[in-house]
Length: 262
Image 1 (cartoon, rainbow, N blue to C red):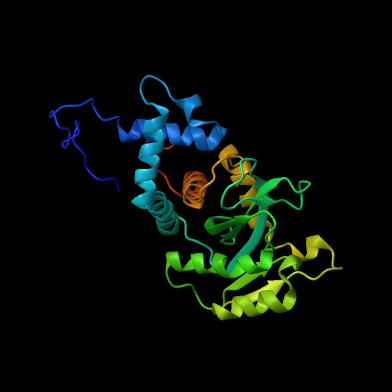
Image 2: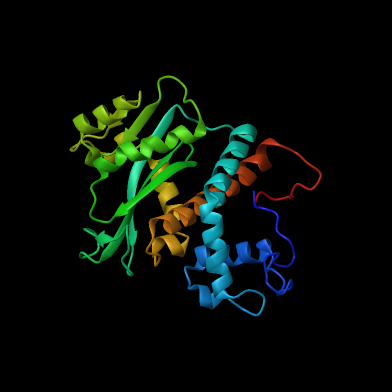
């Protein structure tokens, strides 16, 4: 997925330069930033500087590496386990954005402090299929269309796919938006007990909780949308890979299979 590069910079005027830091080293630092939510200087050391981490991160964003990695893991999960695409729950989730930026706005659930909202679609088992980010004061219903557009990345959907939504999307508007993409919608109605209506919708809420375990997303300090989306794709790839390993332990046998389910 990454372009091949020599050990030294070929365009250096003197024909020599310090050795290029390995991609694996930089990727390990990016995962640390994603998990711990710390600054780049906190994970930098003698092996890799903060400037190198930022520069390599931007190179990979421009090359589309993070989204390709997310789709690669999704394809592997679909091949070994199988995506359950008959039911697609969609829901929004608020997180903090104290540094402002392109997708930051006053959060209605945090005393109008800087916040970010991400609208996520998953399969029936909670595997993230795609997400969009927006300021914290954006309503859920305008984000439904862009979220459903992300499903086009995984190819044609089966017939009679049902999108499960909560009452915030509105019965009429949510149904019309889903119909524009050839999907049916089942929207929760106010006044009906939540356990009765939440049978098919809880996986996306669990996936949003998994996403909040990555502190770079739960308390986002990045300001540019492309960087935030890159970290979100990386988080979804890790979530999907974890589920793949856990499900494969039950369904398959191999020589190096752990004795206990991970």
